[in-house]
Length: 225
Image (tube, rainbow, N blue to C red; front, side, top):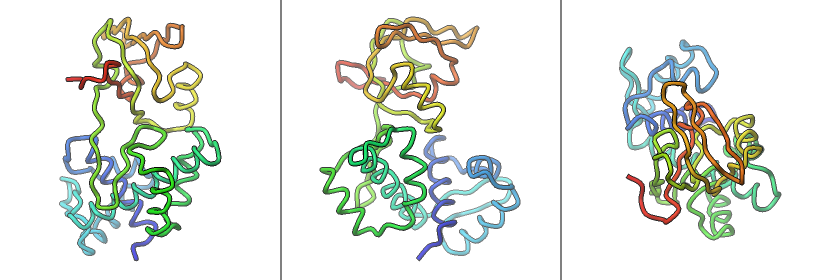
């Protein structure tokens, strides 16, 4: 059975690759994401390669093998279902569930996870809009565009949040931008790096960096292109 450390590494590598069109994850990216030294990452990447979970080339990066991807999806399935379970059954807020699920995801069995999946009626996404892998490893693709790329004057619905740090999620909640919230982009000022939206009856100005962390879709349900 893979160790907690190995599971955390393959999950991190998978998520980095998913954000950059499957390009190899760099050692520095992994180190920053996991809060460890680059030398520690290098040693673990060699271990993953020896175990057949990753393909690692020094100075080029690391990609997961099919076995590595399967393990990463199993961990993500556990994590995201646990987040949703905690939110729905214990009424934890979306800024609380991530850390709790991090502690629990390595301890639950696949059998229990399958039961949680059925109890929740086989949901497609977690409280942050991240798609939940199915038991067979398949996963829906979240549709939409980043808010920073949205059309001025176009209405939107918030469908996914990429930054799940508690502070950022609380900021969104206080701004009336919880998952599923609807609004309209009223200004996108590239020169000043400020995006302004109207939601919950208020105008909200945010940095473009923050807007890039939000995935939105059209409120009429049509796919955004």
